[in-house]
Length: 446
Image (tube, rainbow, N blue to C red):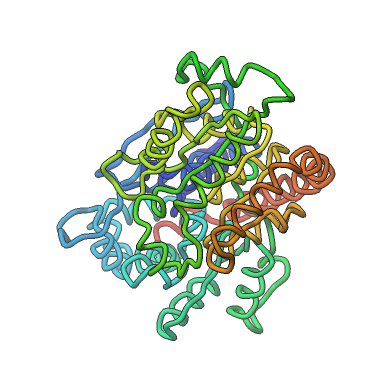
């Protein structure tokens, strides 16, 4: 058996596993584990934010480990670095010479296919020029090197600047396959493609994190929390709450960036005080962005602040999960909850995909799209449109209906799992076909 027949080389952009954001890590893990399960001969290379090329062993769902190559790629003004995205972009235009001059281009040239997920929702210009270019450049580089490109389920747009819209359209039209992760994004994708829309290549799917596996994390959880999640008590339901550090730690940004009508801090504390005062529930605060406490976006820092406010009055009923859990372990912990509410969208996917009744405090339309996919759009509460008390009341009602929501989810999940599995199968088959069509001569001609 030849090397070409035995190994399918796959590059993965937009899902760096070193960001401390468990949502991005969930996209990475779901993609690698899901595709490798269907294509055991696949070998992944993931682009991250470090330097050089390395091989790491990753632990995914229970008992499953996979060796993955890591390739550094980063922005900045040190253009002499092989990993510099500008240097890589320039080298991509130099044909065969580009692969000789730049090691990252050489690696890209060897791939049978490149997958790109754009961090799930970063393929837009709403986060600024720098972010947009960091997301679109890998797509353009891949196309320039004539390597097949698949855009995994993600959000498209909005693109407010016509110039950036044209660049995004160029990338989308050049892709061999493109998936949207919700109906609204699919409409945007169709508009971008215009007459080039092809129902076989351009599809509406679900967030690939629905395929994320779980892995036991008992050894990382302190004894008090472990005992709590091990106890089953219908009179004392276990409630998981994800607090966004990005918003809780910097409330001014919530008003200026997301145009909040409600006070997020008051929503969190108001709901928690009601829950602990009026019900017998136990509360587990679950971070989903694990950056250090000194960083504004740290969910862990926000969860600690909330817990400190509550712990004196409700001692023994408020817990904070550790910041040492990875994406699969966080999903395992969320599976122990009776009801869950998250602000980070991928934390809620971890709940929904396991049939855990869930609600969301949403500051982006993407969240409602995900919940609509599961028939749970009524459990999304939006501080941009609702005032503080309206959001709190919505969360209260959702919690009080958790048994009813569980039944509703149980009916919806089989279809979601079928869509998730079908989506992965189609992507895997497309990878296989593109790999078969990509001869060694294609690589040499770049």
